[in-house]
Length: 208
Image 1 (tube, rainbow, N blue to C red):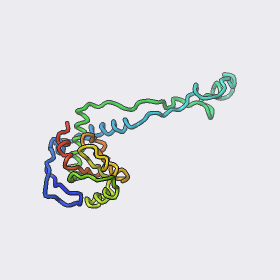
Image 2: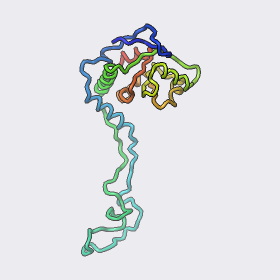
Image 3: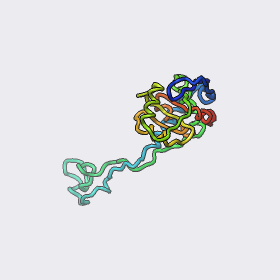
Image 4: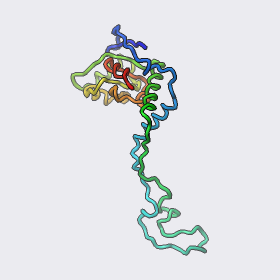
């Protein structure tokens, strides 16, 4: 698959890049593994620090309030009983780890499937490598206007860490910046457009 290369002014440079069909045009994208990869990513973001006090943890007297039988209602013990307001919670949430494992090949297939969907929908754009002398949000805004993606949620894929570009895009609510080696299924699907710099193409073409 060949795509034209644009400069940061939004003009075609006359150059083209070749995207690896084994990454961007697989014959049968697998929706189920895409679902599993997204589910794992979101699960791994959960802190799992939720906690509710149960009966033994609520502060209060342990004196039995009434007799066991004959009261006309449900039996209960002390004031910490879940039957009373302010008592402990029954089977409340406890701290836990929500992360789960996915095989490397499954995650790789999900990433290839997501990139294939984007390529099929024409949502991948290649631009020349660029840099800023200093972090300037205004320059990044101008680039989005030139590329006609202003107001569109997009993922900018760089060949490596470039702090000037990262800091320039940080204040844009619709911009996300990622290194090519760190690209994942969720980041691809969570953005409408994928803007790939020319230097990132070789890294993406050789993803395993």
